Amino acid sequence: MWVQGLAGAVFVGCFFGERHLFDRLVRRQYEIAREAWEADDQPTGFAWLPPRDPDMAFWVRETGMRFWARARAVRRWTFSSPPWILRDPEARRLQTRLRQVFFISMGAWAILMVAIF
Image (cartoon, rainbow, N blue to C red):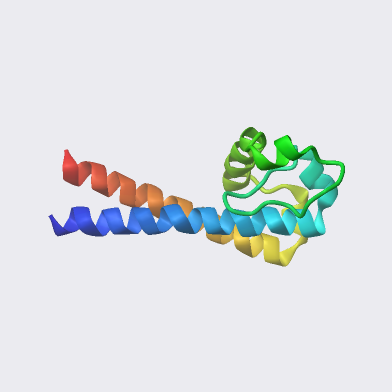
């Protein structure tokens, strides 16, 4: 029983940690590699939105129309390193932590599934 609680707590902690790290990474991309951010369809974070841009339609910015851009960025940055990340030590550090937390969460999820079933 305690294994389920521990694995569940680790998984939930990683869930929120991944989102926080992704927000920091997408903000970093916006700050240092705006061209790459625009080429990635201007992803937003889970909690982070870019500053108001007069060229950006309100409904696109505020209604989550960039959900798919965010989903692609999460998947891409977990399994590969774009050139802008390789050039920036801070972005590389954030990506490494994002990957570590992802794999820890997958391990916790697997333990949780084995313990439940």
